[in-house]
Image (tube, rainbow over all chains, first blue to last red; front, side, top):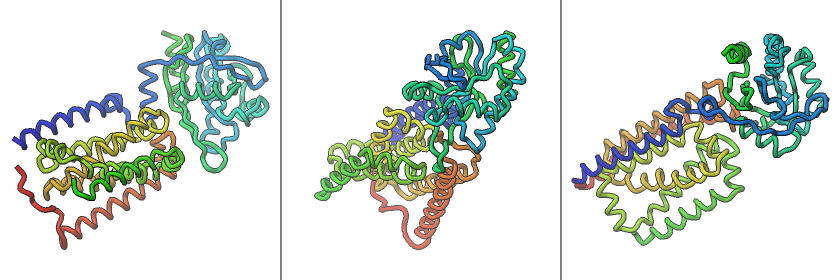
Length: 205
Length: 195
């Protein structure tokens, strides 16, 4: 009797445990929160908040104003000296690659600083210049207030942690926002070809 | 309940409460190594101490479903598996409900069942659990050590690699102790008559 009851209890526990694990891992597809974020956004696009932003030329803008075109968004801090400094050159490359759709106002690139206290318009403009900004279609901006920043990071699923030597480490990526203002994909930060291809395909269809 | 059980139970409750204090919580979650090797094991320990206060009637009815501790140890393994997922550690930091789930599930679904089941487990069950534990620590340790990418968005790469090294060291240490006991001591507990 006791053996049978134990067998029954074990089977029930196993079923319940596997069910919990299946939910937690998006059906055994995601074991890290980065993979989970990508799957979740791909399957359930999220609306971007209309956070007010200040751009490198000192102007105000917001996601609301940028609607109507495809946006490629990355999160940066301009002092970055490690791998994230390459994000800038990736965006300059995208700017060159997507010059056509950018000129037609169908695409824009947007770099948002998660270190707004240090990244004022001057620092943002300097960052773009350093990486070879070609002048149109690439906006660098910082959230106007702390609450807006927190909301943006939360919605995009960006986590920036202090690296212990004055900078940050963050889950860098290229986020795709569709013309309706929904985050529809998170792509590798160092794969501009994939980002350009995604936008091209979307414009064709 | 043995006479000393009340004291163990109280110690478990105090340990649990101490771990839940915000400064302690933040300190133990500031590094991946502390989170996985200090906070979670201490939460399990709190649960194991709390379980010493299990009333005798409850212990008897649980035991009726827990032949040789198998169900309890299975429950603890599954709960342990869930808290070994890198995304679970991240979620505990970013989402208060997951944090609450951790503070409840680690003591009640890992620590307490182990405390109630281990004395009932015989040589074979203990052997399987220990070997699986060692294998998991070595596998995870190796993964954390060699992964070029951060597996937790909230923690740094060097922290992850330190955790990997420590898991390897602990895994081998448990293995050595186990080998030592197999050769010169005993592992099996007392074979209680059990049906």
